Structures are given as C-alpha cells and as structure tokens.
Length: 86
Image (cartoon, rainbow, N blue to C red; front, side):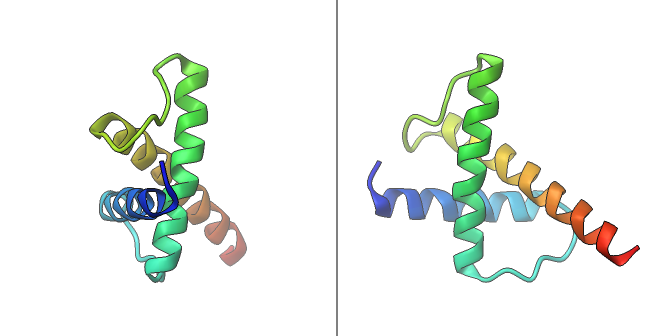
C-alpha cells in the first residue's frame, strides 16, 4: 500500500478503535492516524503469530486486525495513565 493508503487506513482503524474503547482520549487527527497505523502493525504481528493472517491491503479483514491492534494500544495507554495517577 502507498503512503496515502496507510494514512487513510490508519485514520479509519483509529477512529473505529476510539469509538469502541471506552474513555476520553485527547487525540487529534494526527495521533488517531498514528494510533491506527501502530494498531495495524501490532495487530498484524499478533494475528500472524496466531496464524490468522496479516494486514494485506485495504479490506475488511485488514481493518478488523488493525482495529483490534489499536484497541490493544489504547488499553495499554489507559493502564499506563492509571498507574501514573495512582
């Protein structure tokens, strides 16, 4: 995929993950794109290790993998913030 495709893909996965994951996130559009791209990388690594496949283009399965990865990233961010506040 090209750079523009990764940006759109990251934005879509990041927005879906932020809608699914409860809690207030103070992220702008740039950080949402970064969240989606990192989610795609983490989700792709986890799904490949588990034998489900990988992020292989702009399709529903790849968006689902990236969204799950972005939810994992948001979960870790929430846990880190909770530890800092305690």
